[in-house]
Amino acid sequence: MPVPQYPQSSMLRDRLLHLQEDAIAAGSVSPVLRPVVRESWERAIRGAIDPDRALPRIDLDEGAFRDYRAAHALAPVMPVIRRLLVEGADESGLVVAIGDAHGRLLWVEGDAGLRRRAEDMLFVAGADWSEASVGTSAPGTALALDRAVQIRGAEHYNRIVHPWSCTAAPVHDPATGELLGVIDITGTDLAVAPHTLSLVSATVAAVEAELRIARLESSVKATIRRSRVRAVAAPKTTPTALTVLGERRPRLGSTELSPRHAEILTLLAWHPRGLGAERLATLLSERDVSPVTVRAELVRLRRVLESAGEPQLESRPYRLAREVDLDATAVANLLARGSLRRAAERYAGPVLPASTAPGIVEIRDELAGRLRESMLSDAAADVLATYADRDENRQDADVWRALLGVLPPRSPRRASVVAHLERLEAAQR
Image (cartoon, rainbow, N blue to C red; front, side, top):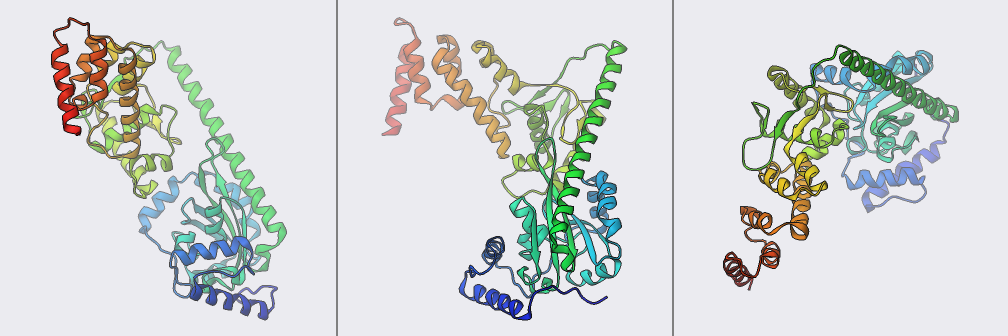
C-alpha cells in the first residue's frame, strides 16, 4: 500500500511548508492558515518544538502501560468503539486511535499495513501525541481545544506527519464533565472527509451514553447491596475518627497515617461526593502530578486501610465507602450551628499544618478564616480569651482588640490585654 496522499496541489503543499519555515524564523505564523491551525502552530513555536526532529515520548514501560490502560475509564467501552469504527477500518486505509486526556495513545487499531507505516512516526500505543510533544495533530489539538478537529496533511506542524490526515474528538465523563480522552481516525484523505467527522462525533456520543448506562447500573447495584445490608439489620457503626487538626500526628482511628495518606483522606472526607483522579492530583500538588502517580498512591492507601479494617475506597470518582468523623468537618458544622464554644474547644489547631498541598491549604485557610470571623463577631469574652491565647493568634492585633472590647470594665484581664496590644503596636512601628 502506498503512503497516503491528499487531494491538495503540490503548489499549496509547498506554500504551507514555506509558511511554516518563515513562521519559525520570524516567531509568528501567517494568517493564510486556518485560524485553528495557525493558533496551534503558534503554541508549538512558543513551546520550542522542532518541526523536523520532534518525536512523541514513550514514558511508561510495557508493564506499567498495560496496567494503566487496563484501568483507564475508556477500557470498558472499547467494544463499542471497535464495533462502530475499527471493524470498518481494517482494510480501508484508516487507523483508529484512542488516547487519554493527556494525549498518550492507548489503543491503535485498524488497517494493518497503514499501522506499520504509522510506526515510522511513532504513532503507536503508549506514545505521547499531545500538542506539547509533537505540535499540531488532530488528537493533540482536539484535547487542547476540547472540541472536534480535522487536520489535513501539511497543516501538521511536524513535517514527518505531512503525508497523513486525521480527525479527532474528545470524550467526557457524562456525569462530571471530566475530560477522559480522545478518539482519532488517521490515514488517507478519507480521514478528513465530512462524513468522517460525523462518524467520530457519533462514536463519541455512543461511548458517553455507554458510560452513563454503566454508571447507572453501578448505582443500582450499589443501592441493592445497601438495601440487603439494611435488611439484615446490621448494627449502626460509629464513624471512625480522622484527626488532622493541630501538630499531632494525623490518625484514622488507631492507625497513624503518613503525610500523603493523611492529605488524601482529608480531601476525600471534606469532599464526600468524591474526586476524580485529575482533580485529586491538582489538589495534592502545585506541580504537574500524573493521575497515574495518584492512582498508585491510592492503591497503597487502600492496602493500609484494609489491613487496619478502616473505611475502604471506592473509585470513579474516588470516595470513602463509609463516613468518617473528620475533626475539621466537625468544627465547621459547629460553627454553622453557632456553637462557638464547642467549635473553639474542638479546634486543636490548623489542618495538617506541615502540608503544602493546595487542597489542604485551601481547607486550612477556609476553616481558620471561618473560626476567626465567628470569634471576632459573636464569641463570649472567655471563649475569645482562650482563642486569643493560641500560638497562631498571639500576633493577631484584631483578635486582641476584639477581646479588649468584650471584657467587662473591671475585668482583671484588661491590663494584660492592653499591655499585649501595646507590644504588638510597638513591633509594627
